[in-house]
Length: 273
Figure 1 (cartoon, rainbow, N blue to C red):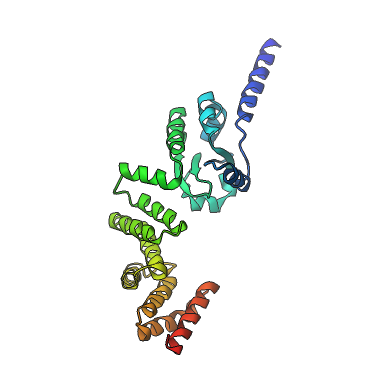
Figure 2 (spheres, helix red, strand yellow):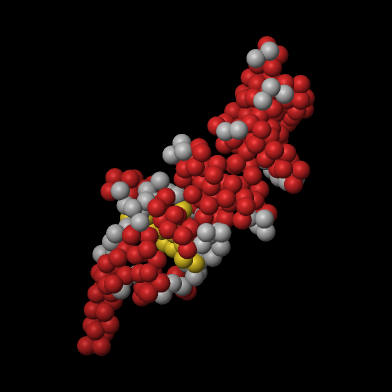
């Protein structure tokens, strides 16, 4: 009987310590709290069948040193199998995965697999040192200046801030270092062309769209690329070629916003402006 009560006491103590970590079970609630409290988020993605997830949950997270540093975050725990879009967005390849996000749900970094106490404390501390994602990414670039994915993420930060020159510069850096990563290069060239079409040099935008159309003809964004290529041509005054490109792809557009852009651009060409 004493042994039974000892086991029961251990169970209640363990679970009461664990409960104090206050993990949210809704990404929306976590997001709202992060915005309100101006904190980063830490998201623990698990699966019911994952043994390492149980170790992380029962043995690592309740550690007093881990718990202390994680109190600097809004903490969210989610069954990853129920959030396929979240897995896709943050490129989650297995469980457990610990995501570190800013208060706008922008990706900062992640730990995949069974993290040690020391690893969680080190990564969490590094994230908390920086006041925002831009600062964090700049710090990472000082350590890895030729990392294309970091330049890419920094470019997205600049774009959200409407710093289009900063975004273009960072995308160009990402492009310079991404020649061996075709998927990332595709994303870079598309985004770079898009921003240049809307906010930058049209000659450079046209060259980027030519590169995209030539190198990624089977992309699921090829019609969109041709649309913005046509818009850039029109912006540069190449109306005949722009009309030819846009007329060809107009019936193939499925997105309503892009249909509107195409029809309005063609109408402007017909009216001579």
